[in-house]
Amino acid sequence: MEHLSSPFVSVIVPVFNDRDRLKICLEKLENQTYPNHLYEVVVVDNASDNGEEVKDLVARFARAIATYESFPSSFAARNQGISLAKGDIIAFTDADCIPALNWIEKGVKNLLFTPNCGLVAGKIEVFFKDSSKVTPVELYESLTAFPQKELIEKYNYAATANIFTFKDVIKRVGNFDARLKSSGDIEWGQRVAKFGYQQIYADEVCVAHPARYSFTQLFKRTVRLAGGMCDLYDKQSSSWLERNKMYAMGLVQNLVPPVNFWLKILFKSNLKSFNQKLQVCWVMFLVRYISAGETLRLKLGGSSTRD
Image 1 (cartoon, rainbow, N blue to C red):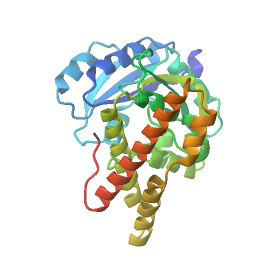
Image 2: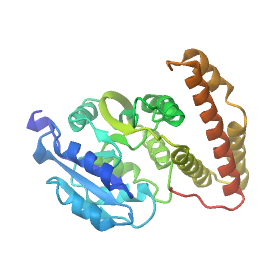
Image 3: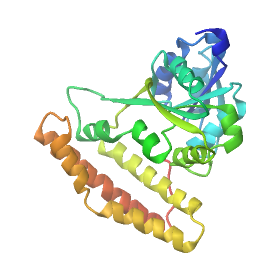
Image 4: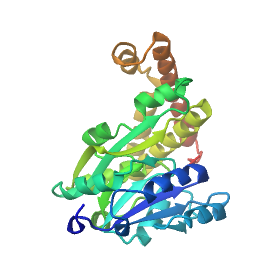
């Protein structure tokens, strides 16, 4: 890339108790095709149990710096990263992601060549822990996790595991809502759209992400996402009636059997066997009812969690 078309980029990576996968992420970020004097990596430790290990790891990488955010929210951590970022372009990924070696180059290109662009969402490619022993949860994740193109085109947001934007866009629309433990990407992306910016999906801007493989991992993620949506209901609702209407709609969506999803899996998916299709349908059933149970728990006075 020519220097004149290559603005300085700040890559922001929040991390919480994930040192080993962060190491892989940083190794890929260290060897990008983008000019190495034109980007930095800001790692934000979000109160990991052993923060010194994170600092020591980050110190091994020439273009990375470490900072700290104590408030338990990945979006608060991202805001801390933004406050230190030197770049005109801000890129977001997560500690458990593996960016392609041309990730920054392709992200910058798409951002610069799209008129009035506020957000570029890249592909998040899910991979298995052991492709010879794929679990039902991994199969479910491979079909449902991180549908970036659909999220952009239908809902005006994308997962922060793979996003590029301009720092000036953030200055205009504001930072992430630090109070949200989950769903902050929904709120922020839709805010960008309301300001009239264009949002695009770019398949060539790619990071890999491990599929969750156990029911314990999926349970934690489902509870976290349900809590994030409930927190978002509270934030966006202007009255008690509207807030409870949103809660009720979310609850009904989860309690109604996902017949359309089941039909799609059974008759249109590329899964190899009928048994795999049944496994995915069963996992979706569990996810729906876990979400419903968490929504009820929060409505009865519980607090959302980031774990």
